[in-house]
Length: 366
Ligand SMILES: Nc1ncnc2c1ncn2[C@@H]1O[C@H](COP(=O)(O)OP(=O)(O)OP(=O)(O)O)[C@@H](O)[C@H]1O
Ligand SMILES: [Mg+2]
Image 1 (cartoon, rainbow, N blue to C red):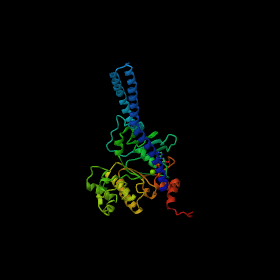
Image 2: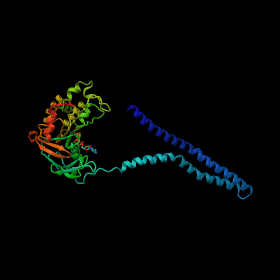
Image 3: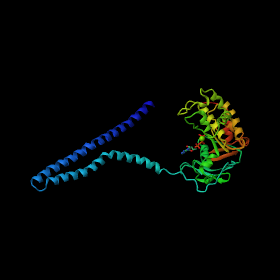
Image 4: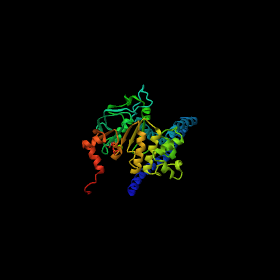
């Protein structure tokens, strides 16, 4: 790959070299060329004028005036030639600016939005249809209801559309048909900011930034005091590992946040959600990178946190969602089955198959 990347870079660099060389050369040659043409005109005027003056057709003053006019005329042309490369660069840059301006606008918030302070957490998905492109539907006719305080687990194979559901709920995308109702109001009738304030999220990919651990957790609620941050960190089992770091909570995460492990990053984002204390929680594979023992501990903390809030939990390790009030089994963009863990096992359908596959020892491994 190193060789391939080098070759690719060299090819691009060559193209840049060629066009930069040409542009520099042409820019450089423009001024002398224009001067040369201007001076030829000057010589022509002097010779022709001299001849006409000898023949007494015009006076020397006329020649002088004519030369003055020619100068006045060629000077702006020369100046334009000199800035022609700047004009070209401007055109190229403007193209990029217009490309940006031409991007489709996010649908604006409606003019009289429903004001929502703290949601109770009743969420209803009503026959929603959605696809990232119109010809490829991902979610087809999905309906489900989450009552306040319930823990809803969403399970299903990779690529089934679990994360997509979360994105629709937070209104990163709008549904193509149907509606999502929060406390009985269509989420499209709310301001995006008000809607998103109701949710705390811990996602598959973590987002931390180049600052101290303390500030990264505080990002969940900006006005939190230090001891509140530390309490949240304790609840998420972050406190212990932070104490093993050289500078503790003041350790600065580097630009790529590569100086802590993947699991530690997840714990930090969980602490952030705990601190934010939102009415609705979304956990998308929140503990996928954490060892199973820590996962059990976090699960306990989470169950405490989730008490009295609506929460959506997406997990591949089905052992973590057994106690959910409702399990939605998603398959090819629709609910294949729904019910509690025991109900679904009794049904012996797709969920049972998924569940058993995680605990059975395969008879033969080939
Ligand atoms: N931004 C996007 N643009 C186009 N297609 C997308 C986009 N994001 C996801 N998809 C497609 O939508 C489908 C569902 O993706 P989604 O992320 O919801 O899966 P998932 O159920 O969360 O899977 P996993 O268990 O791996 O997290 C996939 O087939 C994926 O290729
Ligand atoms: Mg996902």
